[in-house]
Length: 309
Figure (cartoon, rainbow, N blue to C red):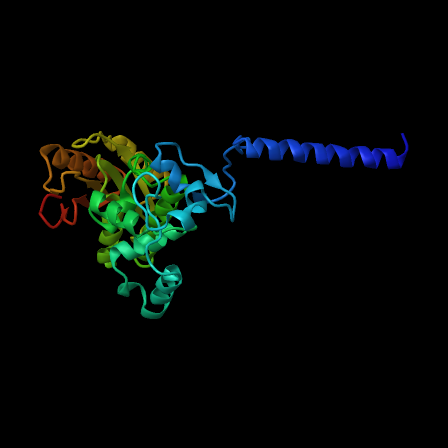
């Protein structure tokens, strides 16, 4: 077969295939396509997956979800055929929100608007305002949403890996900023900032957490370490381990900190006895216990101020 015969054969094959396709179309036989496998290479979460009880998939940049692709014919609809959080406002809402933030500063935004904008980074399209409001209604506040356990956030309808990661990134950034501000000056001269940091770090924890602030001879923060996590009302603490860690870090002073998940910072008998044991052990090695702080939800108690140390 020469080149002309080969080209003619290819052309006839295409014509034959086209004729078969048209006959199937006229007979009502829809062509079948293999569905593309789900990918995890993008960052926009498929909101439609949550609507039908499926695990979320992740899209390549610029790819639309099944629900988004059908918006032009379903906009304004409701029920099974519509997306959970369809865009309801005029075009340009996100740009106006960014302009509001930059020109009028963050204080001009309500809590749900801050959360709405934060979710922009996880959802490339769609209206995130309903999701932001539902999260605040569920957890109680903007701060509580950021501090919510990762497992609870992942189990929340409308959230997935990327949106939860965005929330936890903001929480971690806020804690590092608060910690950096608390470390700028000697801790005892920067008490308000220290309390603000500790409240942000552990006041919303649902189990007791015992932390120790290790200080140098000028009362500057060397390290802030979580020693133990316990149950909702008890954390085991061993004075010998506390003092050993202080010696390892060459710390000369300590501030003990733990939270009460109940929100009531009143110390228990065990809290008082444990503090006394650590203070006595520290005296042997010239390690001073400056204070023991109990952090509740928006409240705190100082052992030194209450005459318990």
